[in-house]
Amino acid sequence: MADVLVRERLVACVNMWPVRSIYWWEKKIEKASEWVLLCKTRQALAKEVEERIRKLHSYELTVIEQWEVKRVYKGVLKWVNEVTK
Image (cartoon, rainbow, N blue to C red; front, top):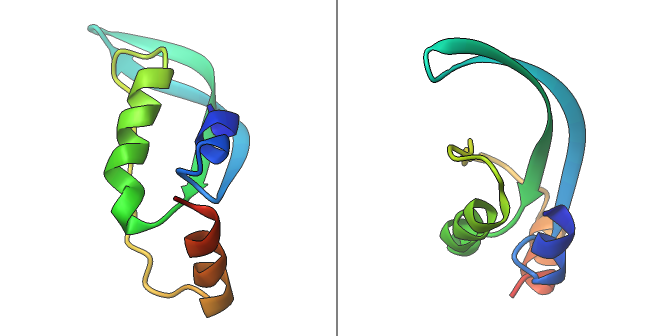
């Protein structure tokens, strides 16, 4: 998924790390090994990134969060804008 998002220029970078999750699903507690992806993109592409992740992901309910970023180094902003479509 990360490779697709970068290759399609929807995101500039994806940071990934494995996690162990415990959660309620269909009236029971589940435990799973999962991956957290932190995708760096532009606000203008956020909806398209979300739609692409939903198509690529196998889960019925994919957790996708968008966080407000209050400050970004201008060099990083320039890079993200240059490498995304």
